[in-house]
Length: 524
Image (cartoon, rainbow, N blue to C red; front, side, top):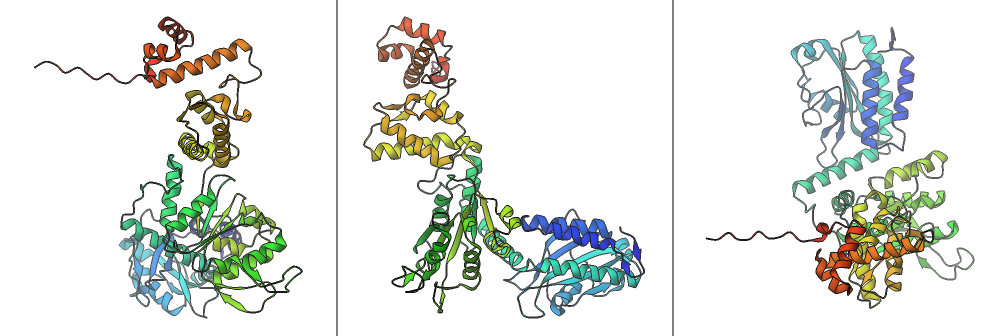
């Protein structure tokens, strides 16, 4: 605990305030930041416990949300006017309890404090004002348990906690939104959603990480919360946005898309908000913006990190006030749009450089979903490749049935810098050039070829290239015949002796391709 003067905590409190500001940095997840804040003030100021109670917008009661200094706390709520915390919430004024056992309104609801603690600890509860609301509106309460000390020191602690509560209040809107969203998700979970339901059409999710992404999409879809899809380019953010919209109550209304990086900055505003005739050169008639087109539906803004600061301010207004103005117009238009955003950029770095608005970041980061790169979920590569194979075989009228084992090995070995988009293009090319019933390694693009996995690398001597190709054909046939070397010899039109020789030469384990023998029934 820092040294104290007669007026309570000394200038060391300034260092704690500085640390609190660092914990509330915009690039940190809110729950993590507030948990670290409580830990910081408890450690620096010598508090036994520190906890936050936040107002539930649906019930009007305070819910115990975050704690530090107690391994487990009861799930309790505080009714306005009841107990110390309830009184602080209702009155909007702080309360200092010099000794818990001597205050008749102290209820000891959450932590089950012992009689010894009740006789030795003081309690301070500070209201957290709600920014931007009517004067006196309270979002929640910040409370601490601390050793009983003289009244002047308690007064100093109270003033310090008022500063901390004021800093927390800057995140009022975000706190309210996250709490409401978590409550909806919890209710949905209690109702038993089909979390392991099959993925939407055209959405392949075999890996554990992508099943988690789909589960998050199903959780947030029924709400109107803004979703931020994050991940590298080509991972499938637009497809996930379509899945979220299709599972939402707005599914019968339009899903409108805009890639913010595809248009010059001076045209993006006109595209989003529309323009009036004569607003600029070339504006020969009135035009509706995408916010108007998407009214009652969803708007997908891809690469939102590319928006100009002016456009960001207007998007923020559209989210908060549900109002827009066309470029060159004065009339205010009301819109009801569910926003789904996506970016491959680190928005936190843009915040630091001033290229992205902090208030907009908080508004769109209500429910972030991270889509892993394809190289981080290799279990999805083969299902995706087979899905694209079926798609393009149908489109181009080809009768391609499968992908050869060596080609599969080649696909799974590749690092896929272009993610799913690159894999799709790769399979489309293979289907176009393939004139067989099987996609083989030499049908794949040269960028995927390697001496280790393909016979087509130009660095291989001719003999090795032929051996690789021979081995690939042999493995494919064994796979088709389930390890039956005699049938393989018939299919390849060679003698059994040659097949047996080649299997031994290349060290092929035939048992990998054979089916398990059924046990014979015992007599009687």
